[in-house]
Length: 183
Image 1 (cartoon, helix red, strand yellow):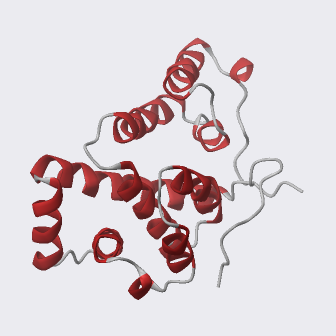
Image 2 (tube, helix red, strand yellow; image 1 turned 180 degrees about the horizontal axis):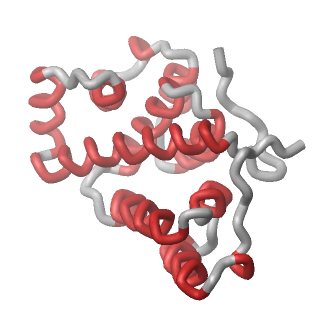
């Protein structure tokens, strides 16, 4: 039973400018996913948010497995069922180890490899407004400055998405099972 606070907009419900925003979002992702259907209640902003997401997905210099582990960490720390349930299969497809997915799911970060721990730690420190010099320097040595800046913006972006999805009370996609234990 749907519980969403914000309606899922259909393209035909939008004016011409809103339809242009819909089309921009669909062009970058192949379709308009439910989270963007909710954001399209503010069409121009939805298109701008999506443009940042598209940059992160297609142009940021962050290895995909590291990026997906970070998304899971952010979703776990913010208890965002939707983002976790969407990204867990994506993380597995990107090569994130099943053991790492389980470790993050249960906040057992000590079970991660040193590299995984570093990406998870930076994601968590960003959420806590406390990125340590040690974490920053270690990640900059791995990624370089531009990719580290991309990573910080990526983390902020996914935190924003989690906050929005939880505030909107987004429903899981049809047929999707909740994959994150919320406690």
